[in-house]
Image (cartoon, rainbow, N blue to C red; front, side):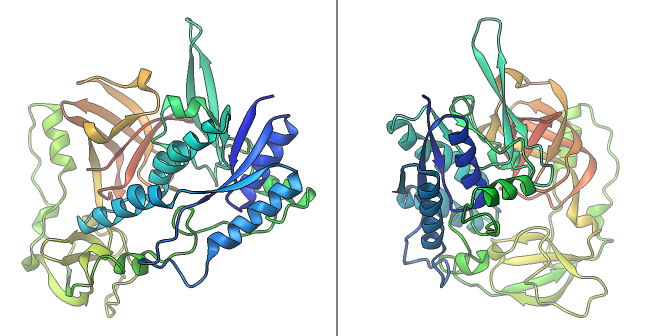
Length: 396
């Protein structure tokens, strides 16, 4: 009998994943990850992980499977929290959920599971795994989007490797969310009606600004409103000698000076803000809401523009350096001067958009057919062929 360790988070998705695996005849063990107990940075007044671990324990008892809690807080602090603070300080916007999966769930946690004699690790992610049998008998694994297009979470797993995928199962990837809740209710699982967590990747409820303010000190600066007519948006068309020159040009983001606009307010620290953000600016009196179009953490200035369609929010092209480039399918990786038509997204919940990827020396350009709003450094871009996620990278 194959042994599977399920990451029981105390939510409905992982509960049903454990139930289905047991039904399929696996020897199932439930493991709850405790990722936080750093008192120097409080997460919230509530203690969600206690409630979640209790719910996970009750589910394990109901299913009749062994259960234990593993404390991964040291690794979590080093690999996720410290990284997040560093990135925000540099004016970049990290994605903790993608990092958690790469660094914690499918690395530290997976190693613990394998030490327990597990053949596989299973999670409650809405995505699927495909297996291609090669002519030499070896296997290539595919990361496929979940059948429930509203809940598809393949983007969060965009940094997984073939090795990690080989030992992973996604039991609910074929299901729709309402079906998952129905299965939980039919089997009297305590998590059947539990709300999905919206917090920082399996820590629970946390307001990011509050969290950041505990390590990144407030620093007063100005908010500048940049009109839609500044010269940065009217660059003359250039005749390029190579496609690479053209891509480098379209990937360039506008550079602003305080003199490009007018002071409309004050902020408490440019490092608390991210491109495309509307909330938290506390500036009134404009015809349309203000959106952050750029942050300058060195000068501590936030540049904003009026309205969702402000040209400062839009670009066609982004760049990923070789160091940050990752292929889930290394066999499909393109070489220098090669291109590939893909569908891509720059954030979770975004519809897939047509793009072309171009490999150059030092990295890879992702060139979207349509301009994309708020391309943000530090976030992940992921690209797909049909319903398979084949690669990803951190936006430079």
